Length: 209
Image (cartoon, rainbow, N blue to C red):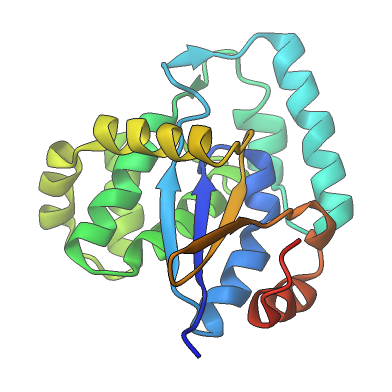
């Protein structure tokens, strides 16, 4: 029986995608093929207003309680409260694409590195140099990565992801589709936060309803 393929609609700067990281890592460790689809939560570079940042902090607290994911002081008391912080998904999605272009499977590793750099270390992951440093930290050649980062077709990729979301009525990030040969099914993921083993067992069993 063919293994299922997990299609993951993500955004590196989405707190709930950070909440889902242990689920994705469990699937990857079990050898389940994962296809990444960057959706672009922050479509343009923006400075988040104070009310938005307060809402994000509250959500981050819920995520930490639910999943045990770590939000570092450098993020909570630095990046998140700084009105000059730029929020923009495009550079981070481009980085994931560039990593996979250089070495298949490394996009997922870089996404995890980006999430931890952002949410734990409070680094400004919208900056090319930070992304290049993170690529080097997972073993990618920095020069090759920097070149790939400028050339990847990120806008077309995001457009394709939005089309996928429309086709399967997927709302927000993260979102999951499980593919069995030519059949696709949405995987409601909310009940699995903090339960990567149950998520993995559900994937393996094919019980996605």
